[in-house]
Image 1 (tube, rainbow, N blue to C red):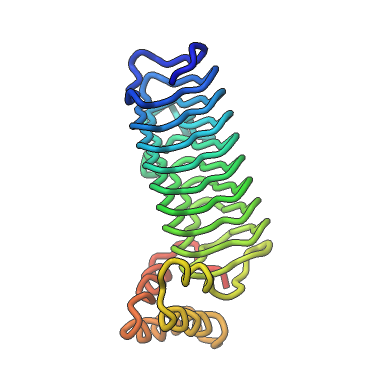
Image 2 (tube, rainbow, N blue to C red):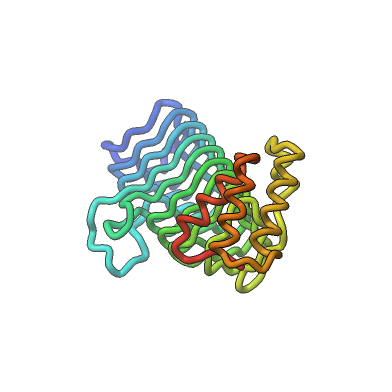
Length: 256
């Protein structure tokens, strides 16, 4: 269950069923829930809590201090939920006092090799991060979003629910929910209609989202005008409220 070469601080709180591989290091303030598997050569440090049924592969670094020159040793956290797969060489940093103080990863996420989550990132549930996706600080990723390999995200950007990026996407502004984006810088390429169908959206809802996309990107309306028009469409199709709310709270502006 726990390899004799693993170094586990006596104050760390690990459930009895936690497995720890060879040469892994678990710090003093780490908590790990039932049936989580920590592979070999993993370092988990800082004030880090990890839930149940996670699989953490070799050479990951979780809970290390932020790569932020303003960080002065304040007590911040990394929180990881349940049923996540975290593949090789991933790096998740603690939060900062300039942000929310916590870097969060939700449940049921599939995170491939070499992914970096910087300080204060907020990751939802059921997301997919392909190899080498890189997030700067304060990035929010909503449920069911998919980031293609080598996607790079600027700090403070938001990625909406069910959005998807192509390989090598450079994201400097927010991606609204349901949108497919690619390029450097990222531009919209339609809706994630296949993903929506797989996750139970009705045919009418998918068509309504496509119509809202045309309103937002093909109608030559200003962003403010498009928001009003989509809000009117949302009276009939409630799924569009997610899109309207996202546009309203965007700080960096959405990709156009």
